[in-house]
Length: 226
Image (cartoon, rainbow, N blue to C red):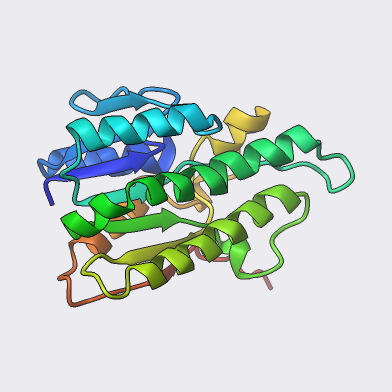
């Protein structure tokens, strides 16, 4: 791999993946509203909740960075309100960023993906393997949408050399909750390190093309007391 596009490399898992890529001399194109501060990353400013921004970013990628080998989607917001308190605007923003934006951008770049024989890797959640968690109606719904869309993209890519990889990812020690709600996670040492998860992500993408892992769960080990 020589060039990877990452949605959401300004922080968290996306930033960890970007860091590992650069160490392996892989060019990183970050698509996010906030720039990634790692030297060497190419930042494309894009508010993923705005259609025009996505269209403009797609055009820029086609013009200047169209020889990519993979697209990794890490962009997401938590949307963690009580079921009887969530607002329409938060529901809407969560769907725009978590579901519509990545799937729409992939559709815009689909011809380039097929031409490049590029792979797609979408980061989901363990919440989309079950009923989710309390106070996460919007977040769980958006990730189920991303999961379904990923399956459909995989169907479209079945006759090509490109691969669609979907990762059900458990809790990591990131600032995701803090950025949305100002809440730091409890016992951070018990949560997965983004660098460790990033290492697995790159391993999946570097597998020979005749190997296809379409879906995988990466989760932190649960502690059983008593």
